[in-house]
Image (cartoon, rainbow, N blue to C red; front, side, top):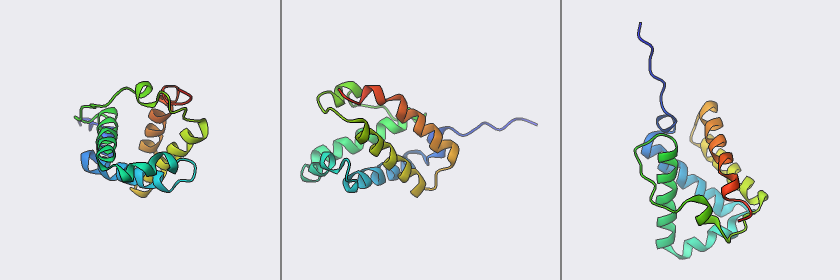
Length: 128
């Protein structure tokens, strides 16, 4: 009997459609999160910036989880340099990511993998 190939994290997140929904939910949660909403609410007034951030986030998550997307944004240190993101803000973002995964019915293994990816980026985001 031939072993079945394990689905990629990208596929377990629902592919492009699932990731798009997850990103929509993450940003919606960020807009309501008292720890970080002041960083995100101004994007509501700048639809071009909002669209760019959403597009890059979808691309980044898609590519980083094994999908065919190509990330066209800047690297993490360049994107976050000068923002002085605190550890508290970073954790708030991670909490919103996990809440979005829960909302979208993502399994525990996949949630753990996304969490590991998120934490692997911490040094490229916090206190730059």
